[in-house]
Image (tube, rainbow over all chains, first blue to last red; front, top):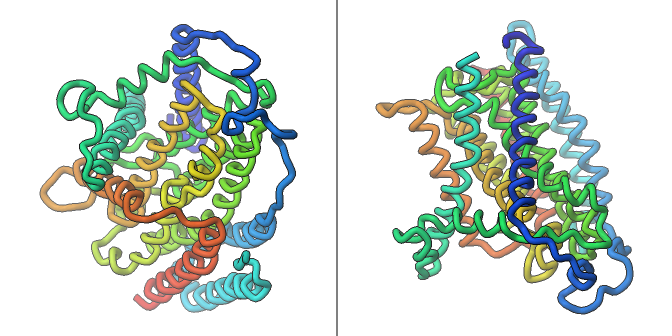
Length: 123
Length: 313
């Protein structure tokens, strides 16, 4: 079990064990539990009163702006990892450091923009 | 082969036993911090068997799936929430040479797999077809979005310092003076990780006084127990990650390496419990503001500090 594929085969094996643990727990539960469904029991829970309207109700979503922010920055951040392992290798040094500050500048600018657009203030 | 089987046994023990210990500790520590006794009956001695009793109870409870729910997604959501925390443990070293797999991409793998755990909560929220659950699921998603960035940036600061993404490699490269050097990153990483676990004070997605139990509102019995186990396994995994990335993992004088790792993990788990008792829940907009206006800039400062010191040395 060495090498690139060997180590990921172990990851897959552990994933299978995890699935088996969850399946085993649910199986044990199946043998031990009662099952007496009634119509009232299966209604959606809304503090004891009859549910009003559909469960997938409309509500105001303010989170999409954070999603945009996240997509922009996280995609950038992914490139940080390969860079991080070599940035002080011989022959890079100061140039890569300057590049890093350019990168940090971009992210900081994005956050300042979001701030000025009052994304972070709700009321 | 035998080595692999042994390391899997260690992983399973860590995964199934440590969350219970942390959970029981939380019962007792919280109780004493609030001038209560906590569980005292189950098992006789200071209620040590309380969580085992809870488990037996959960295993016998009826599995109610609401008629309106999206059945299949509803049923697999607890598994999606739990299993990633097991898979992450495969790259975490307990001691020098006591690690199941040393992936070259270890750190990257950990961050990627940890993110999947939150999907379980979003799936549960959406599939329950309950207004409170949908709200909770939305908040979980927003929280993942906002806190993933400081988490990733703080983790990459350690990768820069060590010059490798392999987790045993990072611990090997760790020196005591990394503690002050990476302190900002460590705090940012730990707080962002707590927020991803939706632990108090970042538990807006499950705020029980407001949206009942958020994504878990409709869950009962074993599936609910799996969500609870996922929460405590998450605390254990976060403590392990903070230990190996920022606190030097197995490194320390006198005691054997695994004892140092476990001691640091328990210390951090205690801090997690302590924060829960100490701070009130943050409001949703305060949560977002903390992530974008405080943690991300701090993580950027840490990146600059790491880069400058590393190149100048």
